[in-house]
Image 1: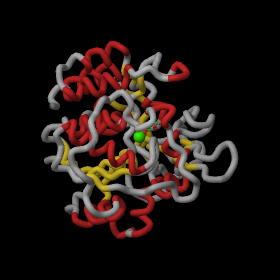
Image 2: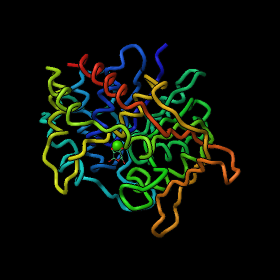
Image 3: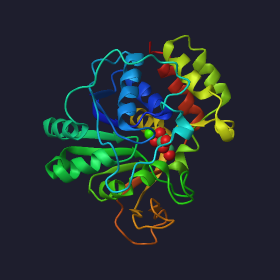
Length: 309
Ligand code: BDR
Ligand code: CA
């Protein structure tokens, strides 16, 4: 049976690869909707980008709903310094052929969850957790229908926006705290594992040589010259790890842990404290992934991406 999923995303280059991998999942996943959120770039642009990627992958059937314009409490911080001015710099993609679906992303998440079978639905957030937090607060009745949340966010060690915080949690720590406290099963992909999933120059060349438009777009994004030496040691495929886990969980290993999100002002804001060794004696609220068989991951990803237009 296909696993029903919603991808909540802020494309973003690695989000784009994650979406494409989901489109290439064959009979494994039933992608009910793509919901967008402000993150790498403002939500008007992440929505346009989701539509452009949907066109590229030939996935017109999947509705795209635009979501939150900014975090629950803080002003929005974006990451054009990583993704370029439009979030997909180098992809060479035209403007979208199609338009977004009516209805706010949060309403769509609530409606899809309510309509899900008793087996529930898997939520896959790849950006700040604002839409999920709003949905859980507005409609807590959907929680029993959330089979699991498989997310990219946080870090066991150093952050990438501050010494303490990874980008998705840094942008909206209050939303992340709501999600980690929601009581549903969570699988967490933080920087500890996603920085093991580095697309090397050889991987990028192989993807570019696939002979399809998908491969050319990914190659363009990942070979674009970037300031400050970014990308010279390869490109972390943070968000694709989430989709890869749904397809090939055997490639990943982790532990059930207690995770707490720091929301107080100061240099630790946005930190995810992960009790890897169970010192705090708190009940686990997430399965934290710690390692990936990266070689096999890229072999399988490249094989799947070759099946797209
Ligand atoms: C996360 O931040 C974003 O820029 C990426 O798309 C990914 O979701 C990595 O910290
Ligand atoms: Ca992202």
